[in-house]
Length: 255
Image (cartoon, rainbow, N blue to C red; front, side, top):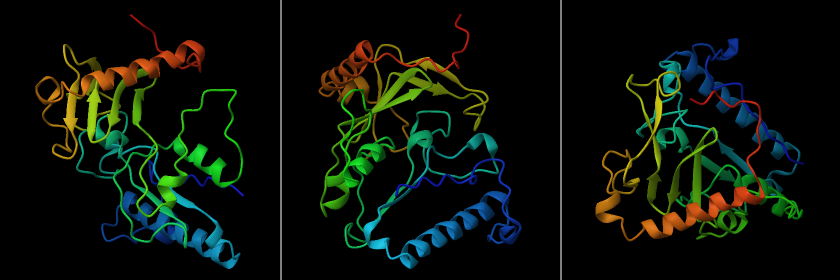
């Protein structure tokens, strides 16, 4: 079986069930909703154990975006720059917890690259199904990364978009921006932000040294990496010649 359980919370506006209202130490809707999510996850895992399939089931817990700062205080918090709606780390970096008793080492931590799209390829492989070859698949099979005790990611880079606009990519410990979000009103990443080009040099941040993306080192200490980055982007963009972007009817007027 394959189950995607998408929670209605935490997502603004949060309306926790009556049994969880006021149950968090903060007694706010968002924090109460986190308690409710925790309870639901616990019940799902208990059900797997009751059915005797917990040892044969991969559980992956994650989120589709960073905290929605526009909804403050009914929102999560993080130490990164930006939030939902941007491709700063605060908009794209989320927890990923993989659970499979007897298959994935307990307590293991990794900062290797994993994209949400990789769950498609990985799930097909684990289910014994071949990944389709008649179309372009953005995901990468990460089975070996998850199952090996010292596994490394099979993903070379993560390409980031705002709607149809390519904005940035993550490669190793580096984040490279070609377009960035500027938010004159703090926390209004969705409601009051602008997407602009970075000018002469991409904005480059070593996330191990500068996780909040505060000072670009693009043309000073990353000239050695730019040829590889530009090659990755060129190859990525070339894929659209054979597999054009799909128009979903959400395009905005262009000046």
